[in-house]
Length: 445
Ligand code: DLL
Image (cartoon, rainbow, N blue to C red; front, side, top):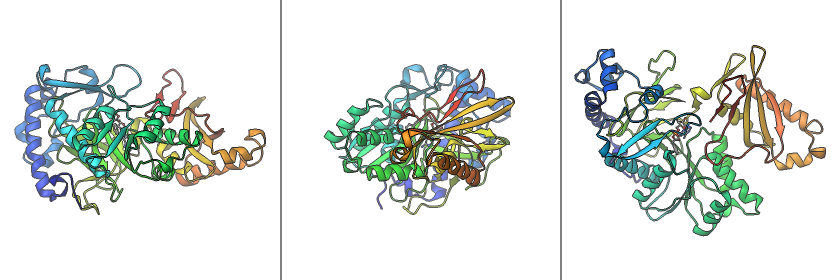
């Protein structure tokens, strides 16, 4: 088994001593150089000297998204601004972005981390990599780009959108690897099929998919559609960008965390207590090597679990599960907590449906209710008289969907079937929840 770096295979205790040394440096750095952290540490009654082992990390206060917003744009930067060589931002849809900064060394480390991630996914020097993540403030495009070049791949910086051109370049350049959101790769595949092209016949062997929640069912759909292997990549701009964790092509069994650069904790988002390995909770990250914007115990709002068991590929890194969703995307219908990914998992078990759906949240009186809009596949649609969902097999399919949601996940939703291609396609992060409840109506990405 070949690893990209030695660190991927070292024993836990050796990794922990690397982590502890780096943690001490990071904590001393933020205490000295970021007034916000000095204040927060003082409020919590801790000094950097109080760190005697990794377990002391939990004495430190959490950092939240609002802390980054409150110090917009550069209030949490720990180095003089003339050492900053790059600025990125979060992909929020409204208001000001959450800003993050990088030094030259930060970009070097990030490139190494992403190069290792691409290697984990099967990429090798000399491969051609088609990068359909958006270039810009979003970290997806440039993050994958620098890692790909570092690994030695011929990198095609296509960015998101212009699907026709994506297809032309895939056909002509014959890339071995594609990077995009899962929903956008599905869109590319469908567009190929509509043009009479067979996605199975492309040169693509590996897909590096992330930036939004997706499911094993979606993986199966994409892998079959393109005849490739699809791996999950996780990251967030506040902590660095893509590459914080990456699945290996060998096992596709959880995402390998970059333990040498980040410490991951899982907490109960209500009590803030640690959650045992294997149980879902909120992911919290502390950076270990970042210079421009080191971050301490950042609450991501993402729900997942971790395991410290060695992967069958031989790597010893901590592995995290697929992200189930963000706490903010979760909605409560009749007392049941619902993540869109749970709905997706159930829908994709039905041959009559395709992976294009969204959930409309509405308020009737004091009650919230959810309406699922989901597309049927073409062959089902063609069997309906005049495309009318209220006759033929339509009502039975609605009943079947409602029953599956209720019996498998206790979810009660109204169901509206939609004609093929009637739900807007994603060119980046798919919009799964459309909140139509009153004044604060918003669309959750
Ligand atoms: O989405 C970074 C990224 C780019 C990751 C390309 C992977 C590939 P942000 O725009 O800051 O950064 O959004 C971060 O997206 O907190 C998660 O809620 C979600 N997310 C990212 N990757 C995954 C994933 C990038 N693999 C937010 N599965 C995170 C589920 C993901 N959700």
